[in-house]
Image (cartoon, rainbow, N blue to C red; front, side, top):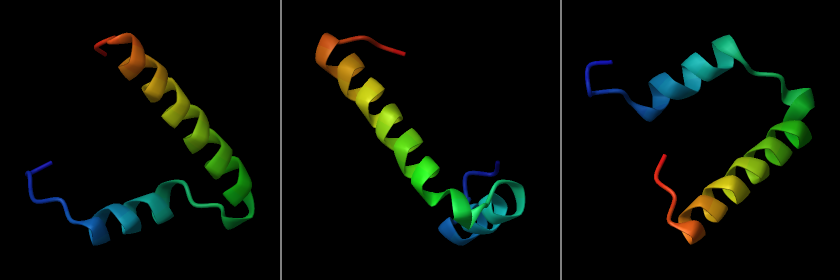
Length: 48
């Protein structure tokens, strides 16, 4: 990347590579899982 990546570019890229509207619930659950893992690491002071 050139350091000038835009939100529009990212949205287009994601839609082209991995976009399945029928899986919105699954996307949300995965996002929630990742946020939980990040929260746990931050609470324990773990650096990734």
